[in-house]
Length: 219
Image (cartoon, rainbow, N blue to C red; front, side, top):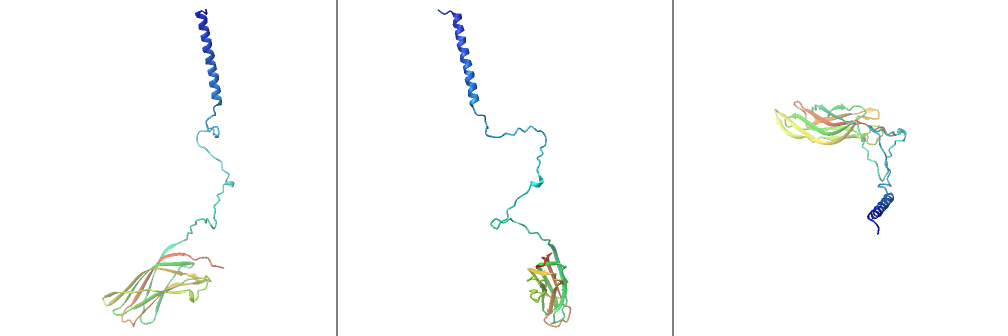
C-alpha cells in the first residue's frame, strides 16, 4: 500500500502538471489572438502644446471648375452711387421752353423715379417731357436714334389762389448717358402751355436713381 505521505506527493505533482499545462495553453491562445485595430495606422502623438503644420505656399493652389455644363457662379459688382436732380422750367406760351441739367462725365444716370409738378394760371394746362441720350449701338456717336423723349402724365390737382396745380409721380427705368464719345450730354426738361400765360407758370421735375460707370468703348 502506498502510504499517506507518498499519496500526497503524487497528488501535488499532478496538480502542478495540470497548472503548468494550462498556463502554456493560455499563452498560446493569447499569441494567436489578432491585435485590435491591427489594420489601422496609429500616430503616436506625444507632443504637448500647439502644433504647427508646414505648408509649401508654392504648392497650395485651389482648382475651380468653370465649364459650360457646370458654370461657376459669379457676382458682378458695380460702383453705384445714389443720385437725384431737380430741373425747373418757366414756359410763357405755346412754344417750347427748355432747361437742362448736366450728368457727370463718364457716368450713366439710371432713373428709377420721376416726380413732377406744374403751376399755371387758373384754367390753363401744361405739357411736360424730358429727353435723354443712350448710346444704343455703342458707336460712340450721339446719333438722333440715341435720343429718347420721356412723357410725363400730369394730373389736375385743383386750383388754389388762381393757380392750377398739375402733378405726376411715376416709377420708371430710364438710362441717360452723360457722355457719348467725346460729347457731354445733359438731361433736358421741355414744357409748354396751351395758351399765352397771363401770370407766372412753372414746371419742376425731380429725377431719382443712381449713377454708374459707363462701359468701356467697344472696338
